[in-house]
Image 1 (cartoon, one colour):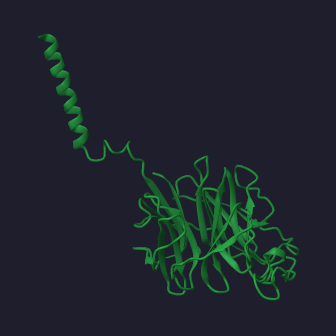
Image 2 (cartoon, one colour):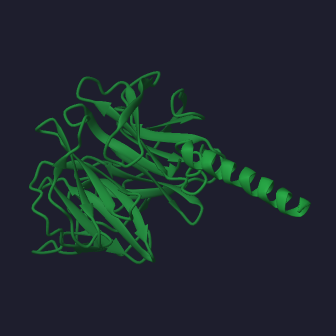
Image 3 (cartoon, one colour):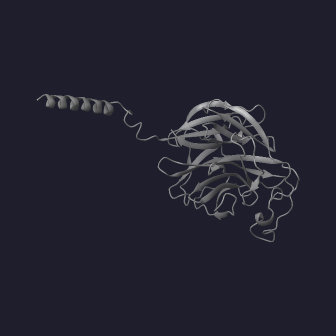
Length: 322
C-alpha cells in the first residue's frame, strides 16, 4: 500500500512538471530548435559614410539592430560584407572610396565596431590579367569575335580601383573576393588571409571570370563553386560555376526575367533550405529578393524586400545559428 502511494505521488509530480513545461510558451521548444539569425549590413540611400545593421529570423522581415553602427575614420563604407570568424569576432570589409584600398573593421557584438585598416591592394598590376582593357588577357579575353582569348595590356601599371569586397570562407580559409581595375574593365580577384587576425593577405589571384564583371559573391554547394556577379557592360546579374575557387568558370543561364540595372548580389540559405538572393535596383532606389528551391538552378520572380526597400543599398548578409 505504501509503495502505491509513493508511485502515485511521484506520477502526480511528474505530470505537474510536464504540464508546466507545456504551459510556459517557448520553454520546451527552445532546446529542440536553435533556429537561425540573419545579419544585414548596408549603407543607405541617405548616406554612404555610415553602415547600418539589421537582423532577422527568417531572412525576409528585418529589424533595426543599430543605425549608424560604424563610420570609418575617413572615406566611405559602401558595399559592406560581413562574416563571423571562428573566434566569435565579426568582420566587415567594404569599398572605401580611396580607389586602391579596401576597408576592414571588427566587432564582438555587431553593434560596436572598431576600424582595423585600409588594406592597400598591391600596386603592381601591369601584367595582372585583364585589369585594364575591358576584354581581359589570355584565357580571360573576350568570349567571341576577333579578340577571343587574346586581350590587351593593362592601361596602367597601378591599381586604380579595388571595389566591392566580399567574404568567402572555404575549408577554414578566409578569403576576400573583390573587383580590380587598372584603368578599364573590372576583373574579379581573390586574396586569402595569411594570419588569424586577418591583417596579412596573399597576393590577389584572378578568379577566371571575364573582365567587366563586378560585385562578385561566391557560394559553394557540394563541390561546385557558384559565382553570382554583375556584368558591368550589360548591367545584368550573371551566374558562373567552377570546380575550384579560381576556376575555370563557365556561365550558367539565369532563366528568370529580372531585367537590367541590378547589382550588389548577396546570397544566403533560408531556414527551409531555399536559397535567397538580394539585389540592389540602384537606379530605382529599391531593394529586391528572389528565391531558388533547387540549388540555384532556377529562380523566382523578384519581390521587394519589405521594410528595407527604398532604404538599403548593396547590403551584405550573413546567416548563423541563433
